Image (cartoon, rainbow over all chains, first blue to last red; front, side):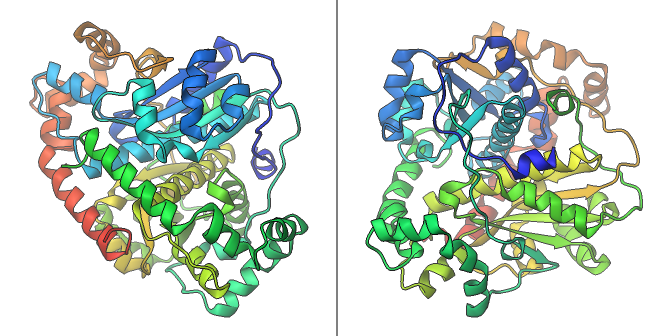
Length: 247
Length: 247
């Protein structure tokens, strides 16, 4: 199992074979058995298979082609609405319309999403996470008719791979793991820990075609700019307010 | 694999055998190969093995006994600090001190955490998530010496199980999965979807010993009260401000 996890990669191109209902149910059963806060299961998943549904979602994902080409598109949502409704029907007084409840619902939602991905990859399926979900969050709320106290967090495209996944490089473990307490990084640490990544031919090429001096500049100037991050922060905060998590 | 995932359960009681370094490294390698936003790997993990370290952390986790009894305690943190430092050293201008960056860092952090859990369970280890991490977040920041732009999100206790995990019940899939768009739940839907859970002997007993009328009241009046959720929301928001994610 560990070897499979260590050699996995994202799949963005799928063939036309459908993912049948029984298989999808099996993946959900695996996903929902994962750990969650107080067994409240504060999440929902919207399954988009129809052509119309995927065409409606695509613009919110900046028209990434896998939204149309994948057999299934899964939108994982933090959901304290269903639980609150159950509480009200039982003369209990739910208090989940706040940031802390959102946080534990989000953690549970991503635990379920990633468990589904691991289960899917073990079956030979390919997956891709769409980070655009929290960017164009208002459009997705409208498109999927999400009620108050439900917010979409991530989207997974799922299908049979048309090509082998590309296994991408990762930082050395020492870049991520701290023994006993957080050890600040010296300038030399940062250089050493990023050297292999910066020298990969694919990354050098990526810098060249973007006419930048280095990989960090590609990310800060083009891919994840301060301006975009701040804009999409405002959008996300507005959505949390609209959905009732923030006063 | 799917069967393993469907039959797993949380383990809170561990035996004394250590988890050796090679095994822990293998789990980290699996965890960090999971999907992440733009391959930025916006997370860090603090490994607590020492008796002193665990004793220092325990109060922040309301002295849950597994903090002391597990071989390893792992605190998973959303971390845009290391990435920002790398950018500054490359004359790039990082803009990750905001909510949207926090959100994608959080998603990546939990994806890595859950992948580690799946890998650990496949090796026969037992895990338990500690939701207390985002409650007493300030204490954990101090204890682990987390710098600005790093926030702890979840903690996993890891060890060899002393007893078989208890597999807990879950809602039927229809409670969680929506086809094409979110279908509101009727009152009858809510009753039907929760009936099996409410009638489990363990849950009926749990209601009785807490002198409540039903399970929802145990959760709203005792376990996840509105008052606590609101208090810990303020604590978490303060921590985000202190760590530089909120202005």
